[in-house]
Every structure is written in C-alpha cells, then in structure tokens.
Amino acid sequence: MNEILKLLEQDARLTPEQISVMLNRDVDEVRAEIEQLEKTGIILGYRAVIDWDKTDREYVSAVIEIKITPQRDRGFDYIAEKIYNYPEVESLTLMSGGYDLSCVIKGRSMKEVANFVANKLSTIDGVLSTSTHFVLRKYKYDGVVYGVVEKDERGHDFI
Amino acid sequence: MKPYSELLSRAVLGIEPSGIRKYFDLLDEVKDIVSLTVGQPDFVTPWHIREAGIHSLEEGRTYYTSNSGLAELRSEISKYFARRFNLNYSPNNEIIVTVGGSEAIDLTIRTVVNPGDEVIMPTPCFVCYEPIVRLSGGVPVIIETKQKDDFRLTASDLRAAITDKTKLLILPFPNNPTGAIMAEEDLEAIADVLRDTDILILSDEIYAELTYERQHVSIASIPGMRERTIIASGFSKAYAMTGWRLGYLAAPAEIVKHIFKVHQYAIMCAPTTAQYAAIEALKNGDDDIAEMTNEYNRRRRYIVNGLRSIGIDCFMPQGAFYVWPYIGSFGMKSERFCERLLYEGGVAIIPGTAFGACGEGYARISYAYSVRHITLALEKIEKFIKSL
Image (cartoon, rainbow over all chains, first blue to last red; front, side, top):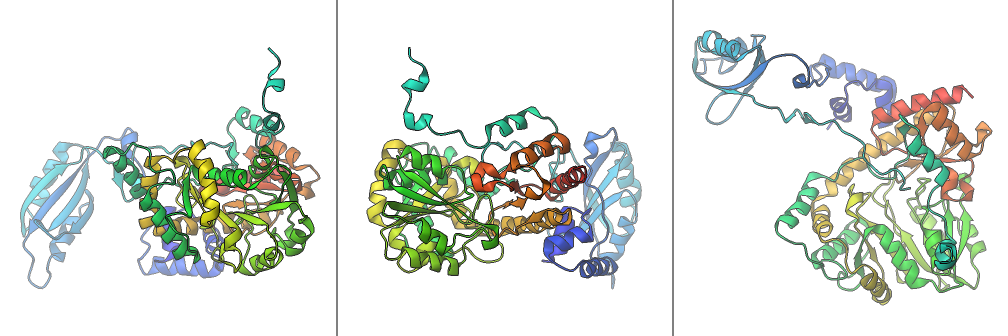
C-alpha cells in the first residue's frame, strides 16, 4: 500500500516535509506524488473527524436500504446518481445481498428524514422499496472510535 | 528498636533506587509538561491478543501453570526463536517463561554470579544490571561505549576489561538508552574474544524486534556462543505488552536446570492470563510487530531529523525506541540541562547520567509517542535552546 496515503489517512495535516522525513524520501518527490494523487482523484479531500454528538448541533441520521430496478444500459448508476445528488445524502453504496443501495442521510429531525424518504427517495422512478433505520449511537466510524478521549496513563518512572 | 539502616540487609541498603530521584520528583511536581520520558510502547496490545487473555479468563483458566510455563507457549517460543533468529532451543528443558524480561535477568544473574565474581557490562545501559549484580555480591565492571563506535561494544574494550575473575558479560543490544545495535560482524569480534574463555553471556534481547536498518542477530547464533549464552527476552516491547509482565529466557539445558530452581522458589510461575495471550501473540502477531516497527521507524527518522535541524548532535539509533542526543555542547551538566528544559521549556527528557556515569553530556528521549506529540515537544525544545 502507498505509504504516503497511509500516513495521510491517519493524519491529513502532515506536511510534505514531515512525510518526506518519516519515509526517508526527497521532499519534492513527495510533494509531486501528493499532487498526482490529488489530480487523479485518489486523494479527494482533507477534513477533520468531528464527533457532532459532542456539539450542540441537533440532527438525526438514518441508514436506508433501497431496492431498485436497474436501468437498461445504465445499470444502477443512473438511479444512484439521482439519489446521491441530494445534499442530505452522506453516503451511498451499492451492496450485494438483500437490497441494492445503502444510503446514509442526515437531517435535522426524524420528520425531515421521513419527508425525504416519502417525497424524494420513494418517488424516483426505479426505486422499488425502502427500509429506514435510524442511527442511535455511533461507536466507530472510518476507523475512529467515538466518545473516547485517549489519555496517556503510562507509568513514567520505568526507564 | 534500632534504626532500620542497621536492621536491613547491607546489600540492599547499599543500592540506590532507579533513576535520578530528584529529577523524577520534579516530574511529578511540574504540571502541563510534554513528556518524552516513557520507556514503553504507546500502542495498546493488539486486540486479538487481549481477546485471547480475556477468553482464557472466561474459560476459567485461573490456575497456576507448570513452573516453566505452559507447554504450548514454550513450544511457540521455541518456534519463534527458530523462525526469527535461527536459534534452536528445546521447549522441554531450555526455555522458562518469566515475569517480564526483568525476571529473566534477575534469575540469570543470581544463578551465575558468586560473591567476588566480576560482571562486565557496557554502559550506558538499562538500570537493573548493576544493582542485581551487587545483590549477588558480584562486582560490576563498567565499559563505557562511545559515540565514535556507534555505542557498540568493541572487542578491544572487552579484552581490556577481562580478568581472571570475570564470570559474565552482559550484552544489552539493541540498547536502551542509546539505540545502538551489534551487527553480526561486531558479534563475531566479541565471540573471538570469548571463545577460549569460560565467560558466560547474558544477552538482553528485549528490543530484538525493534531494529530499523537490519535484522537483529543474537550472539547465541555465532559459533561457540550458544553454550555460554543465556538469552533474556519478552513480550513487552515487541507486542506492546508491558503491563502483562511476561518474558522468557533460553539457555542450554544444563544452565536452565539451575535457573529453574530460583524461578520455582521465588515466583512459581508467570501469570496464566498473560501466558494465554502470549500464545496468540506468537501465533498470529507477526504482522502487528511489522506494523508497529514501521511506525517507530518513521518517528525515529522524524525525531532525529527534528533534533538535528535545531542544532542538536544526535546519533541515529538503529534499534529500540529512544534517541540519545549529545547535549554537552550547551555548557551544562545533563541533569541541569534536563531540569531547565523541564522548568523553562516544559519538556521532560531523562538525563543521560541515569544510565551510568558515561551518560554525562547526553539525554534519553523516547519516541514511543505520536508524531503530533513529538512535533509539539520539538517545537518547545527549539524555543528553549534559542533562549539559552
């Protein structure tokens, strides 16, 4: 696996200078490689990992299982595009198994989510059925454990 | 009643507690410091290993094991020695599972040393060898390793230290605190000095998995050395298992037979839960080691580069997770430098003299910390140095 990607995935704030030292590589080379990774769409962005539950923001999120009819020539992509273009949609993935698309949406309230499903999602041509599950608590997401603040409890008098 | 100083063992009264007490007392006192002092991994034991320990408790495995440790664990340790270091030790009578590498060191010294025996130890080194040797009535013979030799033990220094009374050589590589290693050719040279003597070797290989530019070589794999070598090692550093307190030693059966008695009477057996976790570590933990070593290696380059770029002369360590920068050029004794860095700079590092008199002029900095933590510390150290 690309070492630069691995490092940036852990900490997107690392600078090319820091990365080049850690990997024992030339800094210009690292800078060029990162640029290339951005250009080719392998690195899509850099952002903070935020636990919104600890803020005063009120929101609900839901996972919606969607069954659809694939379209001639366009497969699942056409309907997927129609769905992911809604800004409420946080993630959308094509799944194997009992349903086709897994959609995570975030809204201000349950009512807002319900409206989205009833008025926007279900009315799309080709959407056969939806099944909505509200998220109660986020334990771990994208490799990050939520709700735990790490503390260094190591004894320091062992040398 | 008489004062305790007259009642207690003279040997124990004669040794000092580890570290530089005064400095460690300061550490507890000063708040909001960025510490680079810790001598243990910042990783948590990988979950599959912790889970194996938990499972053993759920299964009710809360009894003592056999004195020398679970047969399956000894068998895995034996396979590990063969797989990683090309060494052959019988799981039946050449391996003892101990309470950390520390117990292995203690047992070995107590088994080997008679009063008056000389024990050679290269310094700077881990703090336990000298007091344990003294408790056995042995006489520590210090060799000071030097930066010009990359802090390796040289054959000529060793030869010069040997007398008729020399019983044991302690070989602490990869080294805490310098990060020095002994490469195969260095060990060959040491072996040439020892081959025609009756000197035994205690090879402390607790950091064997943490080497960065070449694989660790054990002196026991050099011809003629196995018969005189006791290897002390453990799970603490390689698998981030310090708190489990689990180590082991390996030596020829005729030596282990006697070490075993000390272990049997003093300890009985190592903690059972930890032993089950260790089986899992050895069976499925090679990838964990690789990943953690890789991460230490990046930090090693990062911190050495950082120190050098703020004008601190720093030997590039080859093993363990410490750097050993030279701070003598700032015109202060090590302890004074560290005290001022703590008070004025807000960073804690350990004065080199904690690891022997030859540590004067140096300090030990641990990189068992996140890159972000190291970055913060480096910024503070730079500010402090500029203020001098």
